[in-house]
Length: 446
Image 1 (tube, rainbow, N blue to C red):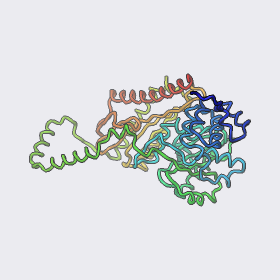
Image 2: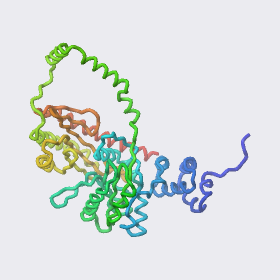
Image 3: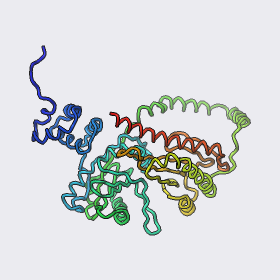
């Protein structure tokens, strides 16, 4: 038998524990589905009020709100270890502190044990939409490896943002390890450069954020105690387990043991039989014999005769139809982890610093501000990597497994191969842009 008990609707249920009029006014700005979700997923009245206010303030959709609830934002917001109270006058210091979190959850990326800070940077910028969602409202992305000149030297900010509400530049340094006190000196130099070269009339002092894998809070507090620049240090959390779809592609322990046993048995066979087999294989081998190995001269030749012409042709292939879709475009040439604005800078760096030690060349195109997306404008990046081995060099798009083309050092790509590389680069870039536009179109139709 159905009960005749009269129950409160979600709006009334949510307003039991606090000022009813304030809560009702706030809730009136949210959809019915927001009400139901908050009731189901948040039990504490204070936490409910937190998510109600944040949803209204940031204009979160229901799915975004669920993401923030599941990420326990209420436990992380404003928890960053910092010196804001000593470097920013109240009440602005409290406002600044509430903009940042600790820890940041980057569980949309996975990095192996041997990952570098550049790998983390690549992963975050490749997932810039999710990264901005985790950072929060008001962060405008300016660039990665943002170059600043000081005398005859160049310095590169890992990530540079501008916070539209705080009116401050935010310089973020990524560290793959635990916080060390010496990191403070580097971020202070970067903040000085940002304040002197970037800050405009009406802007406040820049803020430095150091994101570390872990930290000792007491060490951080001591390191920042005497600094006169606003700095915060937070941890980040990434996906710790290898995704299932990748795990399925790796061999199991049993498979590895079986293969090792087979190899042991193979090497226990008579050596003469092995030698004869090798001779037969060599007689049938059609590959070209290696004539040259990597040298400083060959490394420089690949940069000037392959990377630079290919970069120009890729830019030319995009300049008529793709680049005009964006507000601006940047082009970077890389020698390992060092970025350069021009090929001449890269050649000079290679000749004076790297010598033959450079193992990766990379051309990167950054497209900023997709015009037709309105307020949902987005940026996109793509790079073509040239990996230098002992006897050959290979081409690949970004961090995708495998490579598109492999050449010996005495070989240069022919026109057919160059066209193929350009098409693959353009195709990969268009895939990224199409995905972003489809996402925006789908959101507009919801």
